[in-house]
Image (cartoon, rainbow, N blue to C red; front, side):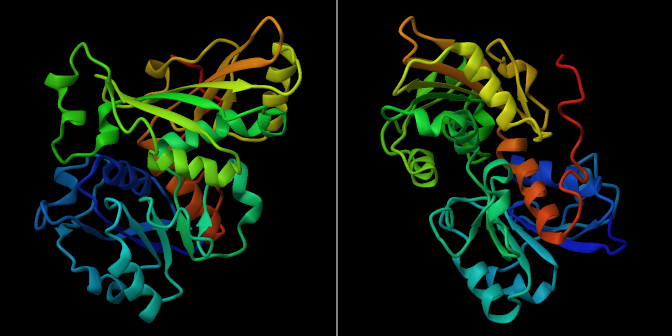
Length: 324
């Protein structure tokens, strides 16, 4: 671990992902919070809203064109889609050496930004200072599909179910516990941004049908894949195990993983490898915590890689801990 301490600022820290990032930064020996920006919480102590943080820092309402002037080594943008432009432009103009990690979809299709899904794109990192964090659903989909890319006979069909934290903190039907009680709410069934994201990244069309469920956090992704040739379930599982053997945040399991066992944990579980009688249809299930490996944990992986720090600094063990 480097002896240097890097300063980090978070824009959009009121949201669920911002809170998880603060927790990770608080546990990081090489990072120190420089500022946290939230219009709604401006003036309030961060420690009063996040029990992991022990300092005296207060939330601020920082104008977008003033972020660059704060001089942080790292800026994380935890803003809704379409809100990053002015901040990034200001940093590009006056502080181009600042590491920027954007959690929105604003730069996931921009080839000048590094797309930071380490398990798949780690080898593409070449010192870039602009990192686009993948979407939560997109992470679960890509990790479930990637090992089978060369065997696909057509578009994978992905049935995704997320806890309502994925809908953010701004009130809507999709994060209203009363409307979600005893319910499963489908939405954006064609053309969801994560469908386009995964199709672009994997280079094959992907069909995605998202739903929101009454639980707070965690994603279940059931992926149906048609195969060009007959394959056996044991061979397929061995392929996933080989592909992810060196990945500390991906666990391959035999049974279909449960979302209740992934909530609050920092990795992805992939399992339930089921093949049709003719061997040409495969169904795989992946689960992750949408706020962690689907957002904050992945951002921390990307920050650590970019700063030359151990990739799992501040990230709790995953594979080594037995499932509850």
